[in-house]
Length: 328
Image (cartoon, rainbow, N blue to C red):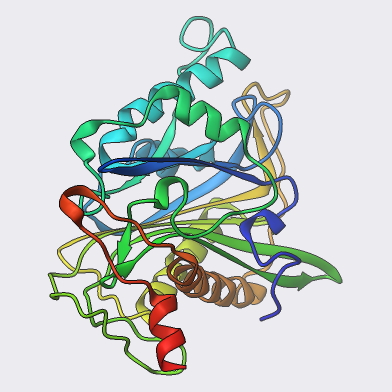
């Protein structure tokens, strides 16, 4: 399918991404912030959905997103032990915009997703701070750095260095162009199992371990879809993950979070009945294909863009880019 203007999740109008990278000594970690839209997300929530392929993970906020079909904060990605800290940062961010949270109105549902970067970072250092999380939100812009940045700094995939990757596809609906974009935090896959689009299987020259780790996929679109359709679209990201050679092992956390910038949900609705725009299911295959393609490409982009990181006890992982240069 044709890519978006920048082949990034930020091709969805109004969406921004920011990173804070922490690389000091044995610590290689960080935070990645996804701002779905400008303004007050708590007051004008986004329609959202979740698909948990394998739930070996410690993310926060997904249960409420799945139940209510709404997203009311930015999305933060970080390491496993940074989830609580990032939740606190999102709560402070939301309260700063809405002083009535928890007092005169409901509490807020912070959404944080994680991967374990303990191979290349001293995760027990608990290095991520609330200031780092808030800074990632402040730094959010249209350009999306990929590879060993932000939450992807210490991640590995298929025995190679992993990290942050993104891609997008264009979809035409009733003569209007829409975009579906993906951003992944790739930290999964058994060494030797990676399958490139041309069928080759790169050997990272590291001892194969069990299929474990995690991958977080965030899908964003401006298509007019409801929560049920979004959940179906999220499920197709699993096809993109599988194309790279993963099989969702026992110890792997494979989670997809999706949202649309259409069909906003008012925190204080002015009417007892609201109306939404919804594309025909007869046209949803384009969105399914886009979810599959963007997820697969974003994973490969994360690995190709990754740069060398030396972590705790001298741990390191080879670069897929080096393998490709060597083997053509």
